Length: 294
Image (tube, rainbow, N blue to C red; front, side):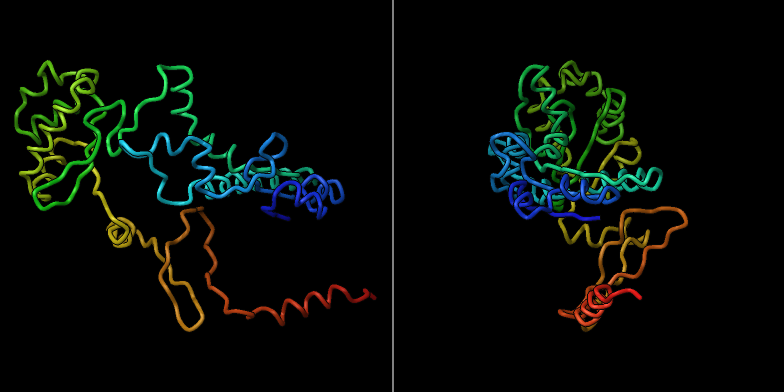
């Protein structure tokens, strides 16, 4: 397999574009990742993660009053995952037929696919929905609320029965379940500011333990609002052993285990090589392969 992320024209000048390599070596799986893909007026424009987030409309659906980027390299990761899945499909086909592939993955194509749900809703519906920050744009209550200790909790009500359960078990005021302002999701969305103000006031008077117990009694979907340290210490990840020791020069560090959990497969031990650690072995292998075969 061969992979690069040069621009299409740069790769073509060097003769390492996927089509050329695949034509010369039909069994090769040749992969290229570019910003904007082959053809079109933007083919050779420079492309970075934030630039593609902007181009793909991600900024326009992220944040509240002000637009925001996604807080990690979503365009890079998105394109990498489509390249990964394409490579797996191509390797399976090669195993069955002997045929390789020329694979072209565009960061813009990939991220546009991930934005397709709000995109289609805007094009075929009532236009682009406003950004709603920590709140769901079409379901209420579905967002974050502060508790008495200053921590935040996410509450996700998915239907009217769950809302009635929340009013009974969490708010301890069952009549709100059939209140004409809030009885249906459409009514809750129409009165979302009033709804969230009411919930915010009630929840702000509850401790975290009390809120969790009430939400559990009502079988209401909820989540902790973690920062990164909270994620690192997450009780579910820790209980399931989702961390591994990785060797680095001079010691080991703890890192996240691979999310792939495939029966009968044990991931190999991971390590980060030291600078120049493999140079001698690599050079020896290159020399060996270049020697005439007897």
